[in-house]
Length: 252
Ligand code: 6GU
Image 1 (tube, rainbow, N blue to C red):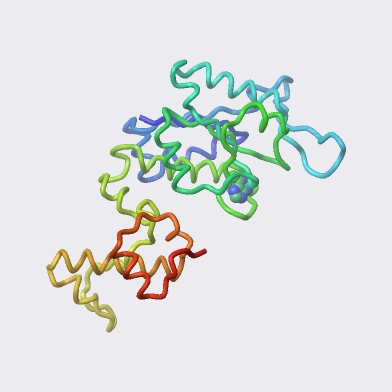
Image 2: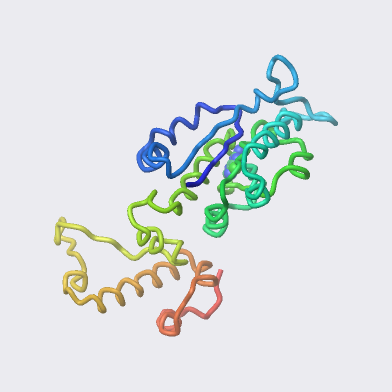
């Protein structure tokens, strides 16, 4: 069981996850718990003010520290003391570290994850200094708010919760988790509009099929994402094959 607590100005946005497909089923069957906390409920005034003008002037509002601190502290008070220090408190922001499978795995090993959805021009710096353990971006472009980014994180982490995805093999063998891009996939028909499925896949020879798939993965990774080869676990024969394609051993 993995617990996500999302601190947001738009808690209703997360209904999507509660209802949608694989994640919806995981929530309903208790494999993951999703709790949303409305940051405005922790505002210090009656109007639920969560943002304010920035000192020094300038465009855009800033998320105030008091409601966010109070909401995180209330959340932490509700989790068992022995789990607190192992629970990431992650802020979504375009300034964060770009999400990758390593961070996803780190979160998946935690007892739960607290996600703070950034908004407006940004957050008061004291939130960054005093409250969060991680700052995460989902790519180099700007969203209107951190909610969609938080949902991306929840989705990617949930795949590693046992039983959320069909079989553990699916998770272990998929693209990126293995460190390489996926080999081509085919289903029926064997000939579609004149393009045939590669003969080896229909040969029934599992050793040949595995070798073909591995080489296709390596070739595709070299062509499209050579940077991944710097960290992917490679065997000696992988290296020999890549060298035959002109790979020099390090790439970016
Ligand atoms: Cl986490 N937040 C916002 N506002 N924009 C983003 C992002 C996050 N990641 C990429 N762009």
